[in-house]
Image 1 (cartoon, helix red, strand yellow):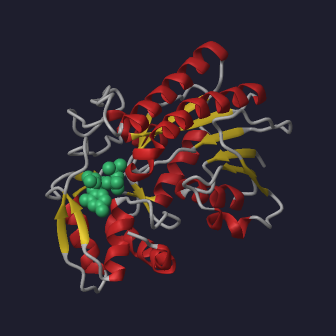
Image 2 (cartoon, rainbow, N blue to C red):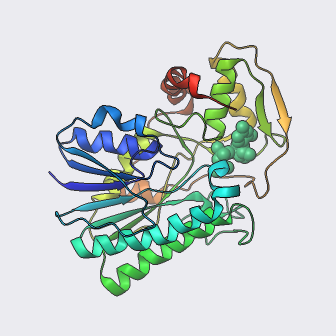
Image 3 (cartoon, protein in one colour):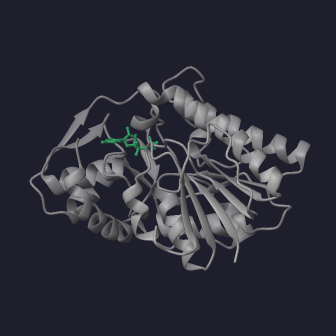
Length: 318
Ligand code: UDP
């Protein structure tokens, strides 16, 4: 049994990780300020004897005296509508101050820290598919920069703490992921399209829908994240974590319309600024080092996701 601290533990990936690691008999300390995470996600875990929840913003230091073996640093608003606009400065603070505070905690406890980085570090990529060695094409003054540059700086902090302080780190770059416990109101493409279809509302494609994303089912992602965390000290990453099967946004809309009987029509609206035109991970490193490949194709993973959103549809506001 390990003691594992998960920041962002009430968010989409955090909740799924809490459930998985708790089911394996670990002691879980879930930390979140519930800014974009949802306490409802972990309500069913609160009575578990090995689970505890700390309401805390990682922009301020977190003091824990009991030993900690591992820290998954997932906390950050992650959907473009959540991290842009009024939350932009908070997003940068969470990435940078949050990383410093969690790295300090990892140093104190000699714990391994896994940092959730993102495919956004590649910006609007000129290399396709994206390999870990690609340094990216980020607009440092654009509306997505708070997240992209925040995550890039968090990566650099991890490597400096590793080099200067000997902290055991793992950096993963998460590509688009979907599945149960996504927030119906996070404004992302999968949640928007499914909820719109369930409610018979217009399906809002931004731009002409030719931009691509590669969607990974949550269980596949969690499996790889856990393997990376438990890898030898020699492995720091960065490592791409995602499904390389690429779809246009229009194809995704059509797939969802095939699965949900609805009166919804597709409409085309303005493309947000700096929206990457394509995205697809090169997963050679995950395949060779971790013998990992995603098992759940989009067509299959959409079913449990749609079922989940049916149970949450009363919350959908868009
Ligand atoms: N998108 C869309 N309609 C929506 C929400 C998003 O067409 O209602 C597009 C968005 O412009 C982007 C892609 O879908 O090109 C993925 O967007 P998401 O916000 O899910 O994540 P991103 O990959 O941009 O971080």
